[in-house]
Length: 192
Ligand code: GRF
Image (cartoon, rainbow, N blue to C red; front, side, top):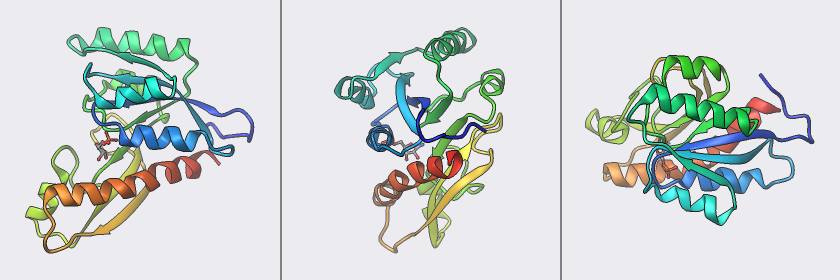
């Protein structure tokens, strides 16, 4: 694992598909003097992803790829990552599953944030599933990405109480606030 040596920040690309609140938050943290990563590239599979606005606001290079031909697209992404000397990928609400071969090329250097207490509720609709099962707690997890969905090594996890009157939307909003603490904390834990 690469380590932060206190001067040269780890060049990072953030992959998004939607609102990009985690992206915005990571950008904010990356501006702190001792935070280990810099955000140098934003990649999206959606031309209309709201989060792309942060590329403009913070003057970070952004690029959108349609994934119609995944193998071809991933080759283009890889060469862009190499060209920009990217050392780490942070997935943040990225709704495409990357291929085994892509993940292997960045082995151990792809992080994801997932809105559940993994290994519970891999995949989509995590909040609705936790509510349906009358779980007392849900949460969020930052993990390394391996070739199996939401199954890589867990770096940090936050447990959050589910209230009686929660619905998927209220639960998702509350968990998202904790995601914004957890992702930077996991990055610090990994690279210091
Ligand atoms: C977050 O809940 C994240 O855990 C999940 O997708 C959501 C993305 O939110 N993978 P945002 O785009 O960062 O606001």
